[in-house]
Image (cartoon, rainbow, N blue to C red; front, side):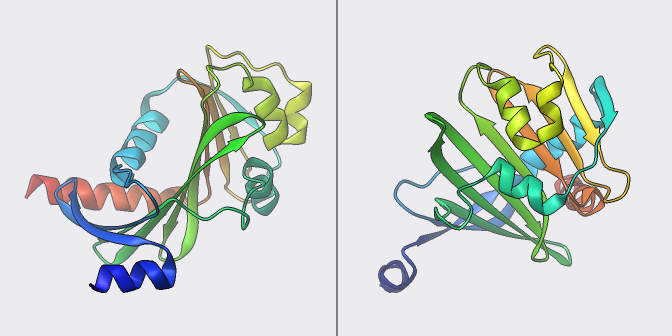
Amino acid sequence: MINYFRKIITGYKRRERIVDGEPATFYYVGQMVMFSPVSMLRDLVLKKQTADFAIRTLEIDPLQIQTNIWPLSGKVAAKTKVIMECGSSVLKVYRYAAKLDDVNVSHYEFYVDNEIAAIFHRKYDYGRTFNTTAGKIHQKLNSIILKTDEKHLFTDIASDTQLILEFFGHTQAWIIFKEDALREIVEYWDLQLRK
């Protein structure tokens, strides 16, 4: 009954699930899409430690890059929201799904204690729009031909923002704003799994 009223007021249904051994609250519209935010972050941390990146520096304006990668911000509601307590921190993840430039897109925003920590963006394009997507994310990437067989890491020393572009079956990008906060979430979860 409470779920019914919540759906009428907010538009979202609510489900409690166990994700990676810990409780998570999913709020969703339509069909519930289960995913593990912590597994996604674990993969990111592992990738940063082990991948062979083509590394470059790039001036990145954190607000501008968010707008460039997701011009639908504020225009589309998140299909799924996940809230997980991670020790003293709270992880919130918003998952959006839409068509962008005639391509299906999944877009995830990761917040730690209500501050944006990372964005994961995947275009289901089989790599066809890899370079044009890179150019839309950051104007300076229009003048660089990026190889799809390499993982590209761009860092901004001033803001400590990082951009990872890669082709992994599809074009995908990570924008990392608060790497330490993400690493703490993963370390907390790893400790919980060992208990």
